[in-house]
Length: 506
Image (spheres, rainbow, N blue to C red):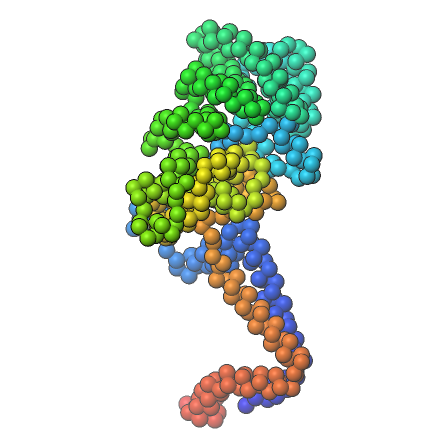
C-alpha cells in the first residue's frame, strides 16, 4: 500500500530527471571504458573485477601448491612472450639528417618517437663507447655526446672532437645527423672509415694485453662494421647497387660472427634490386634455417621466390577448376608461412594501408617490422609479374590454418600478446597501428553502450510524452513490486496484529 502511494506521488519531471541522469552516468562510464580500452587494450571494469573482486569472492589462488604446475607453465609462457617481444635494430634504418629530418621539414611531422630515439641512444653508447674512452680527449667528448638528448649539442660536441683529432665516431654522428644529403653522409663515412681502420689495427695488436684492451678492440670492431655497412647503404641509395653488394659480401666474409647486425638482410634487398634471384636463393639457403631467428625479410623473400615461379600464369579461376599444381602449392604454403610469421605485411604490400617512414627499431612479427619490410621491398614484389595477385588471392587463407584461440601456433610459436603495446611506442602517433588478432570489444563496453542508449531514449520519450510515460512507468513499477506486495500481505495475514503484544503476554 505504501509503495502504491509513493508511486502515485511521482511526477513526470521525476522520471525525466531519473532517466536523464542515468543516461549521463552510463555515457560517462562508456567514454571512460572506451578510452581505457583504446589505450591499454582491456576493460577497466573487467580488470578491477579480476584483480580485486575475484580474490575477495574466493577466486582461485595461483600460488597454491595444487596449481604449481599451472603457475610454472604461465611463468614460462610469460617469459617466452617477453623474450619474443624484444626490440631489434632496423637493418635498413634511414639517415636522420638526410631522410628523417627532410621529412620533418616538408610535412612538419616527427617520424621518430622518443622511445625509438632513446633506444638508438642506448645502442650508440653500447657500440661506440668503452671504459677507456676517458684516456683519449676526443673519445671522452664523444662519450658525453652520445648521452646528450639535444641534437645540436651532439653535433657541436662532434665538431669539437674532430678539432682535437680525426675521430671516427664523431664523423659517424655528423654523417647520421648533420648531413642533409646521402652524398654528404657518404663523404663523412669515408672520413670515418679512414680513422676507424687505423684504430682497429692498433687495438687488434693489443687486444690480448688485458680486459681493457679487449673492450677497446670490441668497440673499434663495432665502429668499423657500422661504418662499412652504412657506406654500402649509401652506395645502394645512390644507385651503385653492385658496389653495395660487393661491400656487403666482403663485410660478411670479414666478420662472419657478427650475425646480430643482420647484414644479410641488406644483402638480400640489394640482390633483389639487381634481380639476381639465384644469389638471393643462396643467401636464403644459409639464413632461412630452423636454428636461426626468422624475420619478415627472410619469410617474405622466400615466398616471393616461390611465387615468382608460378605467379605470371596463375589464375584463381583456373586453379579452382583443376586444383593447384605442386609448384603453386609450394608458393601458397610459403605465403601462408610468411603471413603467419607477420600478418601485418600483406596490407602494406597490397597497398590496402598507407606506408610511413620505418622506425629505427622494429619489433619482429609486429606492425613496425611490416612497415620496414614493405617500405623497401614493395618495389621488388611489383617487379615480379603476378606476385601481388597471388598474394592477394591466398594470404587470407592463412588465418583458417592458425588455431583459434592463438595459444598454439601452426608453423611458428604462438603470436606474442605484447606486440601492440611495443608498436605503439615505436610508431608515431599519426599512424594507426595494425593489431593482430583484432580484439573484440569487452562486454562492459557493449553493456554500457546499450544502457546509455536505452536510458537516453527513455529520457527523450519522457520529455516528449510525460503523461503517457508516467502511466507506463507506474504500471511497470507496480508490476515489478507486485510480488513484494503479495509477500507482505501474506506475512501480515499470518502474523498476529500486534506481535509485541503477543510477546509481552508470553
